[in-house]
Image (tube, rainbow, N blue to C red):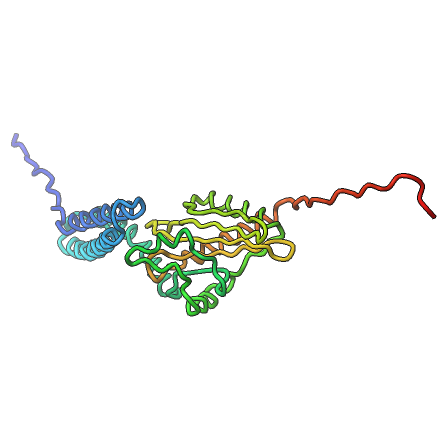
Length: 282
């Protein structure tokens, strides 16, 4: 009886373009993560790290183009590699999603970086001023009337926070919120007589890249309560993509919420005057 021989299964070759698309996407992801960590933890100056991050975005874009070319090649010759293409595209979307959101914010919002609840007399940067003297840093002085007008148009809800508590109580609540947010406190001065003006200066960080944004808070007496003014300013770059306004609005809302839900302060009553003894004269 004659034997029948079966040729082994011959798989289609792997697409070289699909492999390169995945390699480019992985390289872009590693470069983006490394540059982000460098900025957040201050291992190097932020400028080369930022250039590395921009390079990672370029590689992610190149990976998308190679993925499209690989898909066209697979469609024509039937080679394998769709899984690698899909993985590359997923990584590229992951890398480019946040920059795409920032690009939308850049187009939507005005190019300002200094937000305050009091444009006429904004809280000063005293202790923070020395940290804003590096090359390329924004000055410690307020950005000016142009910035104030742009802020009024884009963020009309930003205004001084008026609280029905004493300046000391307002200071304590504000300091508690700053500490809870894990901002780096540079200076804190509780309200003291006679002016009873409290000040807090701290450094906040942006969510992803961790760029430093300086915050100055001033607490002053106002009628029977207190007034809290907040200023948040990017240390670098002329456009903050809305991060400072979001910080000021969130802190203002939290202050109002805590005070509204808190028990009323106990007011110190003056001791009663002793009444003279003996019969009253009529």
